[in-house]
Amino acid sequence: MDSVLNLTEEQLESFRKNGYIGPLTIYSPEEMTELWNNIRRQLPDRSHAAYPSDSYGAATNISNYDRHLDIDLLSKHVTNPRIVAPVSSILGEDVLCWRTEFFPKYPGDEGTDWHQADTFANASGKPQILWPGETEDSFGKGTLTVWTAFTDATIENGCLEIMPGTHNQLNYDESKSMGYQEDIINGIEKSGKNRGFFGYDYRELQIDPNWSPDENQAVPLEMKAGQCVIFWSTLMHASYPNTSTKNYRMGFATRYAPSEVEIYPNTDVVHEYGGTIPLDNFGCVIVSGKNQNDRNRVVTHNLLGSPFQKLATSE
Image (cartoon, rainbow, N blue to C red; front, side, top):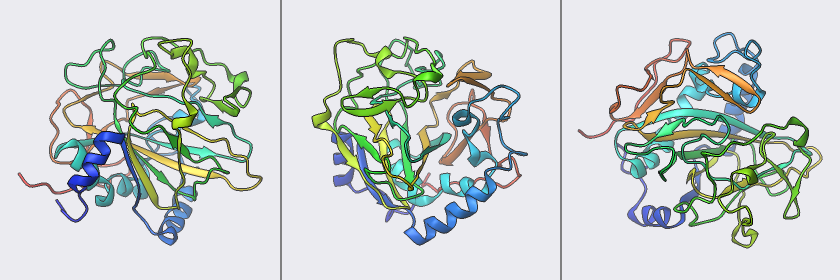
């Protein structure tokens, strides 16, 4: 493992305290612009995509999960040592990537609700990630999210905001269910900001229905294209609405966990966000070390046949 790319003990201590670290630079703005221009030209071609876009009524945001499984440039991104090394500093040598997601925000789009995620059962009603010994009724660590700015992310165009240090106390109960309501998208104001959650209202999951997030704790995460932030999914996080008239924001989230966790336990089809995707072509990617859970689907090549690279670790 390249020790130069690893987090220092000081950085790790800050991460343990605050639940996030960043922004970290992965690409120069020029490199990111070129990379994103090439990727977005390939996105419309779904001939090798892991999930069909129409036959299961999949909503756009879930049919575009896991495009690293069919786009070589995204395959290289999820295994980029500048990402995997700091992630492995936090999680240990044996690490998998189990999901990627695009998060666009166009002019006029609402901000994203304050939320936390542990088992990711919030929309589907079924756990999607379980750490050893974790159940739906117990508090776990969630997943490690690396959110990379594919374009500049500003307050005006809808950058992330987080509440440092909130990753060790869940304010939401994922065993509850949220009802998908397409008509509430871009339609609810919360604490003075237009916020939602892809057709869901995250307040339905609050453990205490009278509690509300303390906006005074919020820290905006403005980033240049090519920078990323690494955070626990259990950290309180949200995003601003895009109030610009012409600048869209594109984020790309890669989700990592120790390879001993169980991904999509006893699940063949994912139902959420108004759509459904089958997991026939899904697989976790081992980005560092070894697979430590034989129950997980693991892939070594993407759907175009290109091999996934793995960060070398000392045995």
